[in-house]
Length: 352
Image (tube, one colour):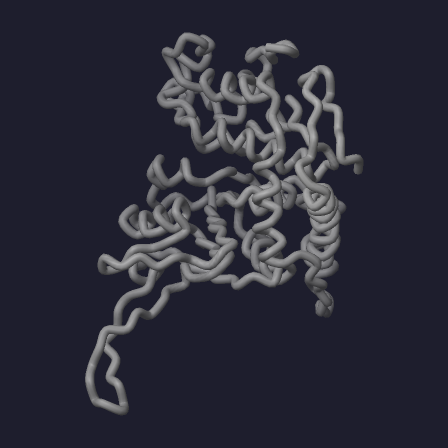
């Protein structure tokens, strides 16, 4: 790659000067690392390319994502395999109705010093102290316990008994939900949903991929996984992503899409006013831009395009648009609303 890249004139007439040769080398390393990770994952995971791409994008940005799909679609296997390939500490928390916040964060225990016989309080870390935390069936535990994840997801730390403990970097939370069973589940609070970068839907694979899944999983499996990218690499990639420039028209387009989701606003389409109770927060625009930056870099580009923003609109907005009873009675989904938004929200002209 050249150390001087001219951006697409449709996007902007800005010329980007990369700050250092190290940035160019790291960008090449990031793109190559993504391909190597994909190669390793394909040894275990069949198909699900879109899902894997969104998970990787989450890792490169440094966010958290929620994965929704029926049982048996390898949600847990995907995240566990990802942790193995990246040499990261993995922790799986099975969320149940009787799970307590301390079961996630840890707690202070009374411990006796064998030498002195004195007793003292010692902190026993919970499963949140890992690099990749899988919150399995997160909606099966009450909101009080779900809220134990809020500080960890946002601040990468936990506070217990007035003391704050920092979590090791990199740190990610991937949550799963089963969309079929609703009995005994609790809806996630909007404040917690908003902290997930993407709402990823995993569906049954096509016939050819499904027969390959059956073939491979019913034979002897002992894949040897290489480890092409480390946790330190991911931290460096996250810093590089934030250096990617975004032209004013592209950033405005991301914000225009988000603002159009809010009913009764000056730019709200009629169908939004009819079907939406609450629109997306500013976090949606932030994640559209950050995700667009990661998508551009892993595609070998140093600029964010309109296509990058629009390609990520569904996973970013899916859980942030709250529909009203009109939409629910008419079977209108947030994905359909997003489709309509992408049709009606105009792209700014170059030079705005």
